[in-house]
Length: 487
Image 1 (tube, rainbow, N blue to C red):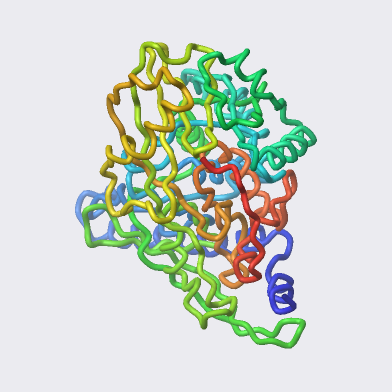
Image 2 (tube, rainbow, N blue to C red):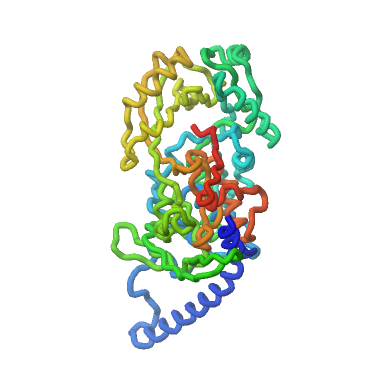
């Protein structure tokens, strides 16, 4: 603990990026001058006079960027947005977003069910989601672009309905008390109240329920994704389709206040491999944001994180890995009506209404023993028949006659340590910041998480929501911040 505190004092100083930028900006100006001289020399020996590039470089990232964001999903785009929104002077910070797949065909964002709720077991998660629902409700105040049509996130405020058995009733009661203290509009319901409001539900095995009265439901993930992307492009953020394959860094051995020696690393250059090509482009930078979602653990390893002796800070890995989750869509004409909330059953099964045509989305997270191979996105329909359908029919008898129409799979950026987000800087790789590991609730919390990371980068501390419990250091210290309500 003493060693970690010493390390944090060494590098968590206010305004890290500001100092970096002044140095980076002068070197960028020097480089621009050199390029101008080279162009003039080539012009003088080539016929024709006008400068023409020897080959097209429009697909390449810039050679310099103040901030490189690895991952162009909603979390990475949210960080980019807040960095530009909070910069002291317009155009002061150059931001590059590197994304492997600009179609987002395998991105977690587009493959999610788009839920948003405040019924978490930790105050920080409630606060994050409260801000995010305000962001969605006022999305055009944040993300409007001149001469572009307004965004419609298609927010459906039907609420979340969480069911608890006798065993979980006391925990639910405590959670709801905390949620209300944080400002969430949630009520408790007895089995009788539940049957009166939702007569289609079988309350067998239900001792208590919690129901979101306001600010909960679901929305269109694509609207948020493309709205953020369109906005940050209008703010001058650059994009590159490619894969980060290497970090070039320098090391500096220092002594902490407790007398222990540690090695601090600073990334100076990011190598971006271009899509369908062997070529790569080095990008000099001051800050790296690891928002690579399910693959952020691999990106952290590229920076040397977790490669020291076991049990040391240097040897502590980022415990985030891809976990495959199935989403099934079924049709049931006799199913629950338009007032149906997103229901999370005591069995772990969840479902919600999809559109107006008696269609429903749902699924269940597998147990550790049931975890499917994350190497592909193939769907296991037997999992639905064996593990999901029986629980659905038990809770909603009308679902006995459902017919599955289609299904898909997506990835959670699953934090194996405590299923909670990782936000802020690494204690030893001092200019790598994290926005990852939310284990299924990253989409709904992205607007608030992006703001928190930008605050840490620009000011050296969290300003609006204190997310210190989500820092990387908890993995080394063994301090779990367990979130119980993960669906």
